[in-house]
Image (cartoon, rainbow, N blue to C red; front, top):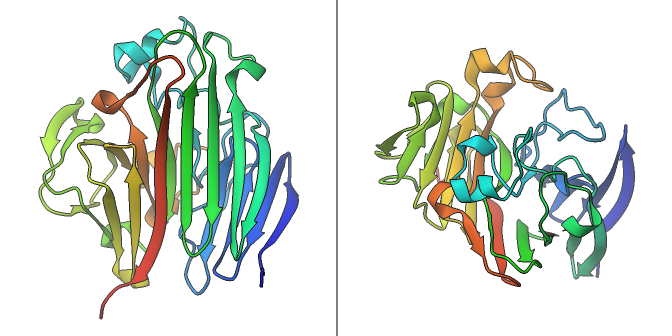
Length: 300
């Protein structure tokens, strides 16, 4: 018996979709195809959403899972091939698609699982400075866990190079007490240390502002949260890089849609294709970036 429920809701200026299954609840905005919140039953939220989030057209909501594409972060910090795809001018941070409406292609139900399919076709939008033909499709499947599949299709006649990320904000009991497993031995660029390269030793612990780009990452990363007694697993494919970020005390005070103490209850692990892991697509080629989120109770 299908017990899933899907409803359209309006949050201030944004059209959103709330999905309820036997296992969890999910909220997705049509703008940016941005997941806003995800909470499995019987648990605290798994995806963090700011209490000060603003639902305004043209700007990304603080929290959830914004889609960063066709570049991540500051375009000037991307490899030259990514920069070359955009004409000179003021390049918005994290790309071009976070503040635009995607087309809802369909809502599919399979037993107690629901899949929302969103499409963004660059040929149907005016993207000043980016004269390329590409189609994005993001499939969001809510079942016993949450699965995302972001596919880029180069529909132009020339090769296309992009960077991208699923900019996931995770909810934690206290970032000072959690650890991230799976990064041991990985190289990383520390943007707070003049982009110098380091190598991770053991699990990552948070002791101050963190903004790191990890390279050669494995298929699974895990957040260990003793305070909430759970481990969150991030299983990915089509990605060998990740960005880990927490603003800590001082930067949190300067962020929009962000309470001064909110840094304690969140951290970002952004499943990505950045730096040496950028996506190079020949004409008519496709690339899929996949992420599955699940959780389990920590062993006593």
